[in-house]
View 1: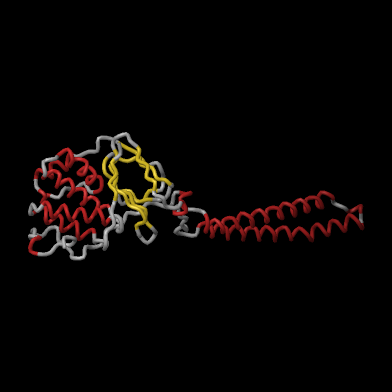
View 2: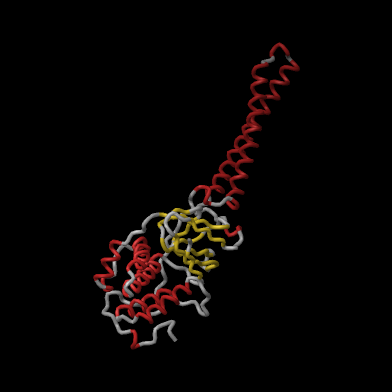
Length: 301
């Protein structure tokens, strides 16, 4: 049975990095309730802010840490496994118990994810375009974003081993957007072919004087007529003409394809790994922990 965690609206979209960094500080001071509140803010923020792999790794690591602190290691393991997939290095400041559990956490198997309609989506911070998608079982974040990273759909989902999760986003299929190639390959190829068509047409025109000369010779002086030369020139002219029209047609198709053919056809629309934006208040991970109670953490007002 699939367990879906629906995202909720957030009045003001939080800075995910700031919330995560502050939640970590709370955990270091064993302020569990405050940390859980901030992680809930992060979950809400997934509905309006793009989540990057390093942020998701931190989120799942902290979720697992809270479960481990609550004496629920079985609940913590899937979170630790999800965190390890994205960032295999443990956070040593979280203590030996958490680090030990993190290092051995593994997903028990694989599952599948399908999208309806089959539009591009960001799964665990990586863009995917082919469905169904085979992935490790356990928790995952699915987001549908615009090209400027505006979140249109977001869902935290936990997929059991061997199961298939079908997400019906209710978004238009037109979001399977068509992108221009990074280099105008089709257009350049089309222009070159069109140029080759022009050269071929020029070759066809060069046969016209030969045809006319041989024709006049055969009409006026039948004894001097070279029928093979006449027919050869005519055949070359026909072939050059057909070739020029064919090259022009293919060139026009290439130029048009530059604007209408999706890059996924060639597999050139590779997924991009994006880096999270900096937090509102930069945190030095190597600095000694500062008691968050001394300040008012974001999202707890």
